[in-house]
Length: 159
Image (cartoon, rainbow, N blue to C red; front, side, top):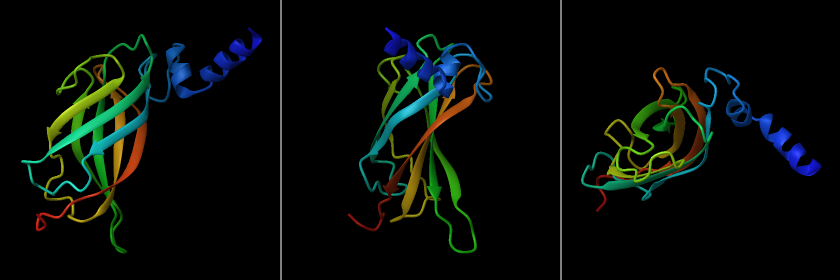
């Protein structure tokens, strides 16, 4: 019993635990904060600007059971710059839990089959970083947890 109380107290020290406990966390209202625990975009090496290709996006959110609204996830590509320029951050797509083809609202998992999100401003055959950013869908909803992973873009000149 004491061990369970200690474990619960440890959870309350996290941003998610504090938010679920009713506190304001960063710019998020009570119960709005969400953490992304896993995310993926498949297949690898999608061809830039080939909109006949499809992408499967999966995002797993850890959120409060009584969150005031669904969450949405915005996907960005971070493209490394050359020695004179810093990295560029490009918005690719925003998906909402229970919308955009996601089969179940409020389950903390967003799964969608979408048109290729890579447009011509993302370089072909490049190593980019995908950044998934969670945001509450409440009016003026807050931005909370992020998740990053490497991704290699394809080349439109290769079959």
